[in-house]
Image (cartoon, rainbow, N blue to C red):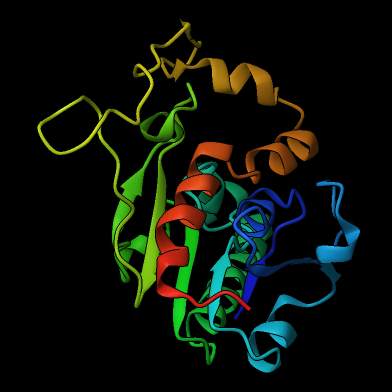
Length: 220
């Protein structure tokens, strides 16, 4: 069974499924950086989603205009036409998100930061990388169609062993009063570099998706 990892150039999720011997393909308009171009489709994710005959899709649509980051720049009174353009980009991003959601694929997960989409289409689950063993804090929503929530254990209990690392603590408070974590320092504050790095899926989450959701599929 074929699995599409839409809008993924890092190949983290694709490789996690491939390691379990499933036919998974990453797809992005960029070249892949995961080292397996033979598993990468450089092109439009919607074309693949609607015509590729996939049974499962895990999608990471661009969140630049959908997240809550930079919300102040949507203020018309302050930013005029620049704010109007950002709203235009936001609606285009929302349309792309919904087209992915409505693709003719049985099992769908869409991953995005909590933001604009959550106001009218609440996500099914909120996760952090540290829930799955990566010592980073990154609040992420996942929207699920015909998929169960990801399971994890913050501590050992009678039924399962702990999957989580310790919850990360802020390393400093910036001038605006916002807590900054180690994750912020590894991304840096260069806008273009940060955008690309922040879009990458942490390996613990990628592995959990593959290990848990692949049980719904039959190996090709």
